[in-house]
Length: 272
Image (cartoon, rainbow, N blue to C red; front, top):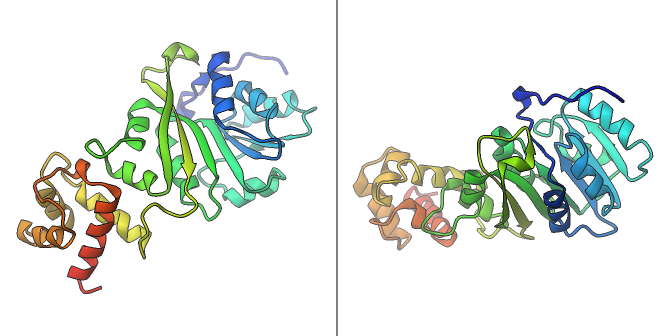
């Protein structure tokens, strides 16, 4: 198919074109001969090429209808490649696997649009059938939040790290993309836990409490939690005491285990 491709700003299209970086991403997926791979945002197909060399089955998902059409033409001889024109945020993951003739376990790889990157990561980690690994490109600031250690953690750090171990593999310069973005990028690897790092009886309620604790992240935990819960600081202090947490520390300093203990202390304080 001919005709020049023009990135669509509305879809946040910045296509990774650095061949060395593409190979590093594909290799970081540690894709076995019998692995199914879901590629998010296949774009012009450069990463798709690298993944197709490694995967038993590659399901390349692209929301842009014109790009999906070009990808089908380009990979028409690839018996292990399926091109899905679909929105990854609304299409059920099970449907993607079925339509692409893929199986489980599976690996997710992709250069994620910056404005929905976090939502995509959350969706796959919280899925009924999560991947065993994700290797994705994110805005650098988001990548640093996802992988942050206690002292620099945010609510997003807790949400991701309770389900997967996370690390930044490398950063990407703007010139690695077409067109070059104005923000920094980083490639993150997420290895999904067999069981959540934090075991709670209600994950949504747990995450709601974490978000409440980060309501005013620059304030001390006692005050931030009080603001998030809509209670007086004395009450939040009593809840923190039940979790044996220092009320003068910042929310960013609390470990995953600390948030778990705080959740159960909060439930006990409310008589639940």
